Length: 231
Image (spheres, rainbow, N blue to C red):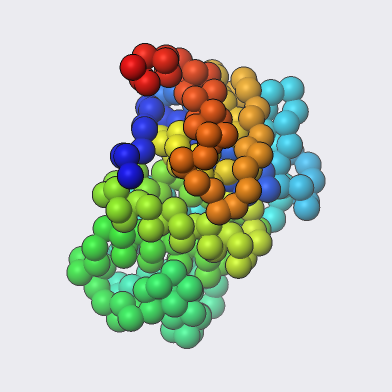
């Protein structure tokens, strides 16, 4: 399999809501922060909407997984998962979330002993334990090697199918965006410049001609000459 094509600061929004792209400095990080803070418009059940070229997200429970797992090194993995929850959450709550991401056997480990992929799974478990209506993934695969990244992409797809929550994924990888999203939004100067539905059945195949066509269309929107790339 060829390595995924990456462009600077492409952003994606996946699963029942728009997917987002944008070049560096085009407002993508600010938009992600606005979603995390809930500083956007109306609608409880609708995850997102387009209003005058801007994104309006639904209210509800949110959780975030970042590019850096941000695990506290002095707390065991299971304690990191429930960190910040109100009251005194039981270990079993953390272990259920860790099992869901395939990391149940590492619940008592220290963060420094985890691989990069394991640390990112622990970060996902920490988000999932909050039972979010909207799961925000802010470039969570950016620091992973190619094979670990593919496994993480599949995991996110599986979690969405099981959980049914909306997922907002920020990524530098156009191919990843087409692989995971239902809709794509291209951002320019902090506003949405283009919307692209992803009309592909799941599971998706990167060798599908329609997949390649959608990828090429989005790359061209981002200023990439795909004809030169093919040559």
